[in-house]
Length: 396
Image (cartoon, rainbow, N blue to C red; front, top):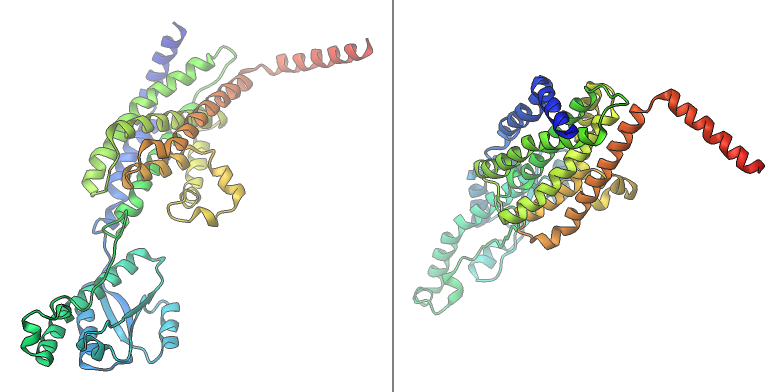
């Protein structure tokens, strides 16, 4: 009876709290529409490169021409040496270097295996992928020229197909992107950022809602915690369905997880988020403190989750600390489940950790409420009696 009365009163309080509803409902919807807008094209264009042409032949000049004609690549100029090109790269004036070795044309016409070298800072993965794709298209344009020249050199023997080397492309690129076939931002980071957005918005909303409540010694701690978890679950579950259902399809994000595996994990993740949100809500005393706390931690948190900055480069104490935040396990598991096609067994340790965190933060929330509602006079009286009793026991 107490629980249903608490649930009703908390539901009415939630419906009247415009700030919480705005953060938890309108916030995720606004981020869903606005955040991916700059990356919707998912590609970059006209990236500047320098060419070192030691062959200086008609074929090497044709390669440079085709590269410059590509929408992905813009040839800034020719470098006289590798050191000169590296200086341009380090200053940010170019993003890649194409090295054409001496003998490139001769090797191409004589059926040898010509080698082209490309140097770039691959940490700029969008730029790197764009340039590689542009150079690949340029080499493809050279293949007909090479075949015609070989047919002239080798005559009808080549045309009859007895030499198989003349019947295939001489210049090829072997590339196999495993989990990001578009080599773009959408499939690389947006899937993880969506999870971060949902986590942070819900924690902020629950923090504001919890801090807006005045705790008294008669406050039903457990009823309050479970009532809030049920109410915010009614917001959280539809948002998960919207983001990972319609949202992923709308932006073309890969999702390979089984529906049963996804929802089993997501429900555990949601339980952990709601428990953590309850803890933040009981911990802060003023609504704005929850907003400040979560927003200030958002950007550092993204770099600590392991999908942008390698975990191996993060100090061990910080790695340990970040694992007490549900989003760490949520992001890493959902990326493996959705984008990499992992089975549930391989992410079970993340699921187990989330359930443990959910129970931990639920207990901590209960403890904080008890401490906040414990009358100070009663507490001091208890401490005094406890101390006197200890002294008496020692004397006896």
